[in-house]
Image (cartoon, rainbow, N blue to C red):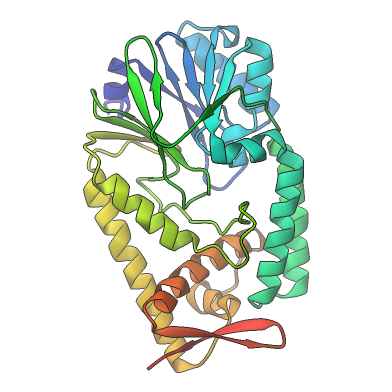
Length: 330
C-alpha cells in the first residue's frame, strides 16, 4: 500500500505518528524541512512519546536540537505536552495563536479553571455527583500529560508564517477547541489542520470555559460549524490532520459532517418530543451507559445539538432545582 502521506513528504512535510495514552490513538506531528526547520505540535508529555519523537526525527536525518521553530496548533494536551521540553532542548522559537497563549503559558492554572467550569456544567445538566467527581479525578490525572511552555512568537488570524521556501497562512478555526489553528500552504494547496478536520472520526466540539469574561455556556458546535463553512471555501487538495490519514476531498467530508450533525439534532428533537430530558438523559438515550471518561465528551456532543434546536426555536431550556432539561417547542 502506498504511503498516504507521500505527497506531503514530497513537499517537504513529514508526518511523525507519536503515541498517546488516549482513545484517539497516535497524534500526528509534522516536520517541515525548510529554513527554519519547523515542527508542528510535539505530542503528549511522556517519556515514550519523547523517545519516539526523537527516533522519528533521526529517521529523517535530524536531531531534536536541530528544531528551530515549534508551532502549536491548539491547546489540547496530546499536542502541547512536549512543546516546552522540545523548546528547552533545542532552543526553538515557540509560536502559537494569541488566543492560546494564556493556556500554554499558565497550563496548570488554566486547566484547573477549565475543570471547575466543567464540573458546574456537568451538574447543571444532570450528570450525577459521583460521576462528576470520578471524571474530575481522571482529568486531574490526565493533566500530567500536558505541560506549560513559553510562547516566544504570537500568531494572529490572517498572519503569514514565512519560511524560506514556502508561506503558511494562519487561520483561527475555533470549535473543537477555542484555539484551533490551521495553516495553509496556498501554493501547494496543502492545509495543516490538526484536529479541526479528521477523516475517520468527527472532531468533538468540546465546551470550554470562555476566557473573555462572558457569562453563559459557549456554543461550541455552532462555532465549529461556522469554522467548517470557512474551511469548505478554501482551495485545498490535501488536508493533513492531527490524527489518522490525510483528506483529499475536504468539501465532501465537510458536507458529510454537516449531514451527520443535522441527523443527530433531529434524533435529539425526537427524544425531547417524547418528554423533557436533561442532556445527561439524552446522552443515555443515545448511547446507553457511558464510560466515566466519556461523560464530558458526550455532554458536549448533546449540548451542541440542542444548541442547534434552540437556535431554530424548536427547543427550550426548562430549569428545575438547578438542573436544566430540554423540551420541544411546537
